[in-house]
Image (tube, rainbow, N blue to C red; front, side, top):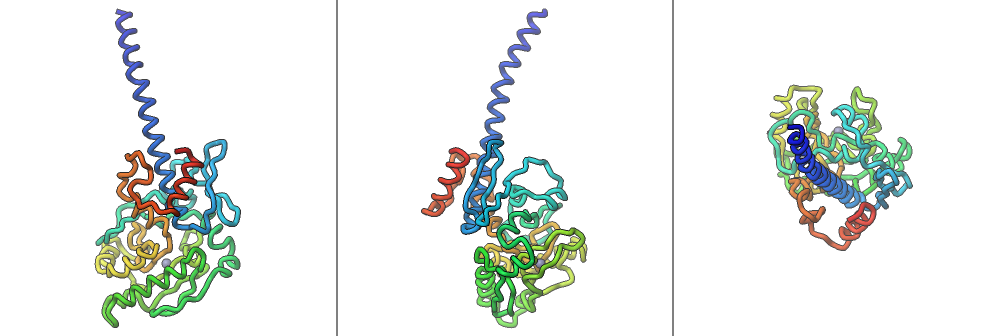
Length: 306
Ligand SMILES: [Zn+2]
């Protein structure tokens, strides 16, 4: 009898060990795929600002910024929503996939693609202080008025192009134009209400269009926010997204008048939005590889292993 139990135990162990090893290898390779995809979209989105990747002896991965600063990619901590919001690593900022299709109501609980920001990264890129940030600003003139915006990483150029597309698409004086103008402002060195965190406006990478009383999650109910989102002209949202901006209307903590320059979020949605690529042997999936993208892929493979 005892022997039978021993044999049964032995067989069970034999079955469990390979399952465990194989299972964790799959998890590990999925994780590495996901890291590589995030690094690729970051390097494509900020080609002049991110100059290298580093993996140290503890397997921590960093991106190296043009100003020499190292930004940790993944702190390996499990976080609640608030912990992410107040203390995001780069991975957290990319964890919610931005929906590129139009929506007609407020997003579900805490789904906030683009609202999670890494302040070390923003500071290294756009400026660590008010005066540093202001050195990078430029006043751009558009059909809908003048806006102060950062010139870093072509943010102001892309804003100008987005507003130009909108003014070319919308009919003069039509109802849709009332969603755009008068503009409510670009650069503004301010904090997000009740948080102590700097607003994206403080870096000169966000614009608020014409303000409506239903635009902000703290002002109105979810139902009222949903009605405003459902009425919002798709052409405006698409023009911004085409130029690397996310729309605050696609956040559970909705901020419907707000557009923010976050090209990495748009690129991740475009290239890796459906998660299919996770299961392919080729971690970069079916994106069209040109010389520039190939260079980045090679660098990532070299630093993290093929
Ligand atoms: Zn705003």
